[in-house]
Image (tube, rainbow, N blue to C red; front, side, top):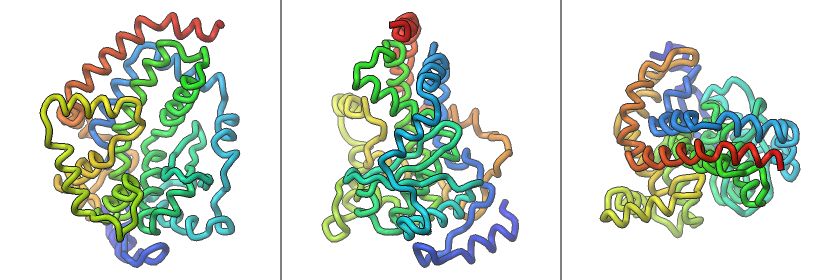
Length: 337
């Protein structure tokens, strides 16, 4: 349970980018919001033969500083003097999630509505300018809190590796042999599941489910408030999740292959499930694990993941694992060319 000071902080915080008081989630542990499917997919990813070797080779090949410069070279550092309102919003999100430090935040000029958290030992966040232009302050708070969640959950190393492998594969670079491609497929599978975790972190950052679902509606369709209807989008999400025959389910899986993020309609449905489970309300009341505390629910989460993750996904990763085992020599040969 939160102590009395936590409750006082949460009730008194306000201002910044909005007028609603939000609880400061003092010392909240990331596993409070992590989705069981995220944990299961990451566990499966780490069991793939040559995964550690691919990780070591890719980052050893580039090094941290060149990677950081490659991501940041065409972006502007956000501060009190650069995009000051966005910076104030960011500071409030860091406070609400009680982030242990301030991570560099950059703005990149692109109409693509997106954001990302990257890095190795030194994480940073990049916001696309299109995201800031489309969303209001509260919606932007959700996106920023989502990315802070990726950092606090230690996702950024694997997220960065995913981007690098995608770019290398698209360039036909010889470093990406069959084994590295197999790892990339598994990384993409995990990446989609990690988004479900950080959707929850984003919700905890704004503490208003309607803001989160409204943001997802805008990011899916690009429309304004006058052009869209949130309730219709929620109905669409439920229809996609529950409807269709076996053939429809197959096409849903095929549609996801190669994507780093799950469809927004699925993310809305998953988030609503979490809210209806009561976990979100318990956290906002102050009932959550603290950093440094063990995760006693980990094994239970893995059992729950049998449903969340689905047998088909596990079979899929089993196939990837076997492909990686057979292709280990091919990966090593890519470095010798």
